[in-house]
Length: 463
Image (cartoon, rainbow, N blue to C red):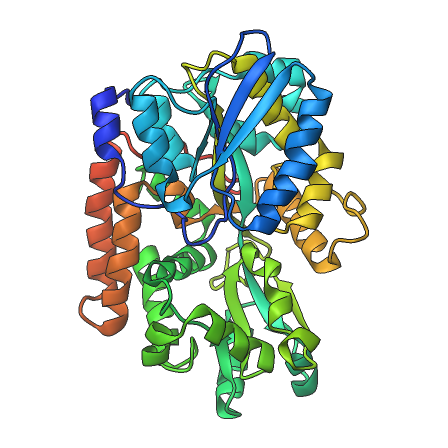
């Protein structure tokens, strides 16, 4: 999609309309301008990485080693409140200042910066560092707008079907491979007093968007989503309405959380505890859950259960059997006004493009450093949980073959995302129908497209 250039005033006015994916990603990164041209000098970097452990790890294992290998460059890191990061960066860039390395919460945000001419072109650096040979092809395609590379996707995520492996073993069950198996399993589990899917949005109502993401990708399919996101078809079409109706039916059945009431009230700790204890059999959640799964299973949680994961099954014939919707937790770019673009690009390369370094970080701090690299079995250190390694390898290999879908928080613009989150709750309570919901989304999305706010939509291999 060709971009629609906007003024800096329009750019700053658009800030703060939504926090795409903020509830999912403990996203990292950013920097602040200053220093000499040619790579030396200072590259200051605002980071929204939270917690003393991850922050200390960043300083010891990333910041200091980078400075040691780039002796003329000083990386100055300032940790900023994650919820404030976009506003702070947006305001700084509006004034012609701000980070050398700009982190955004995802492609929709990056699109606005690109349209406002606030990002430097990275094509020369891509050639210098060999990014075309190192990174997955779709990642560079996503970062190119009007033929120029301006952003590098970072912190990859996807939605998965987790299951209580111990409970499945006791009940003689295997993970469902299609809709018929899923529904038969849900009926059997419900009949035996087990909630099929641990679920709840009590802590974060916006997390309801996980489920339109899952049902649109695994029922409607990535081809239908691609066509709608590029304006070829409508979100009001039956294939999207039917997906939302199916989700509502499952909620009405009590399959998600145990009841509609509990779906709205359950917090994350409660639903994860139910899952770990075997009160619920499965959990539909993002790959970020792997970072905390150990808190709810085994000795740490006071039970003897174990967990595993599988790709979400297709819910309609014709949908790929192994499909991973792409979630982009953040993007990395270089400030157009940076006085040390070479140093900033050197750090982006250091952070994203070296497989040996990245795999060590990904093993040490799960979910925080997921880079778009072509991983294979054996690439990761032995300290990594094999389930996590299998997920990262599967996501890398499937998406490299074009077998990917789209998460709402990465590929829908802000107003459309807010609509998806807020109005989906009204569908579940019966205040609006699935058809009304999808028609309303179609209208909001048309306005977003008209304003040039839709990020670049990369084409799946099946389209």
